[in-house]
Length: 200
Image (cartoon, rainbow, N blue to C red; front, side):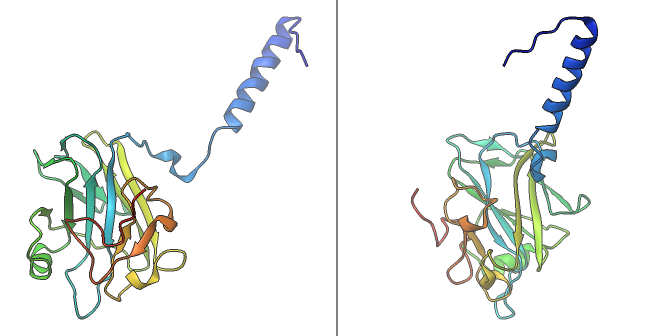
């Protein structure tokens, strides 16, 4: 069907209707407030509620899923609260295919995982035991990655206080989807390939 604009008033109405339709058809996904900057640095493993018998405190692992070394100095890690923020030290380089662990308590972490060499801390906030959001921002404030996990189905429930961590099955998968996460074997694999790793 054709629409012909015959006069000035029709033109005004046409553009008003066009603008209204365009605005109302925009994608209103929950993550629209965030600007994903396209750098493939991913949140890859989360320890948010340790067991009583093995407690390295909370930690989060990120992974460089690119073929380049990335300077992540002055990047920010936040949970769902904007005033809960950890700033990565200046000139921190993350090599291709390399992991970095953010620790709430580095002494507890080292005691539990003495072989892990690439970690930073101390974060002055912990992760929510009943679910939380993790956000990674670059030095310009652009969002690099975001994961919102829960402690109930469809998220792996054994990661809630029983020892296992939340592990992403493959760094190339969508980590906003709970189906792409699994409970780890034992107490997790900080600084190395996840125990539940699946080939694409």
